[in-house]
Picture 1 (spheres, rainbow, N blue to C red):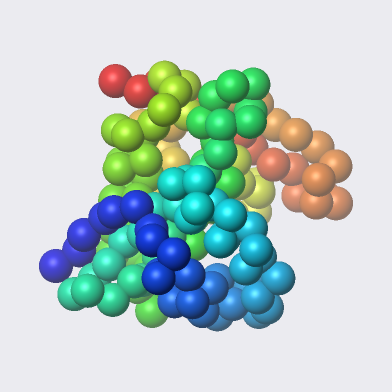
Picture 2: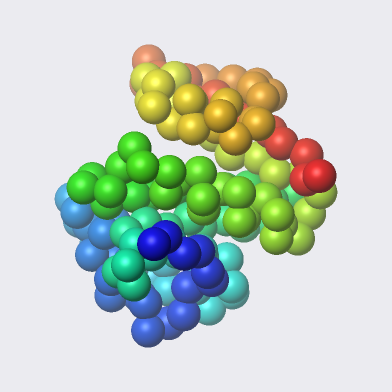
Length: 140
């Protein structure tokens, strides 16, 4: 059974473990900890085990911006990212919610589109040769 909730500081080590598994290092530990403390980190559990997380902020033109959606590799393609995004949008502190992904990240583009996000622009020059696609959804 999958459940979604705000992360607590006790969840930090497990969240960092998942992030490290995906990106290969624990460099974002302080950022994740700060996000948990601010209430801007959401987790998804499968049978009580944390299997993914989402982090957002509200610094993007005073709108919510999903900065990370990370799912452990063994739990991908089973709806966890969508559960996190749905929860975040429904509880968003702002009416407009934005996010982004690289043009090369086709699977994340599909996740956004399946969750009702539309393309809202492109930013060049963040990752050489791989533009960032900005996505938008208005909170219902």
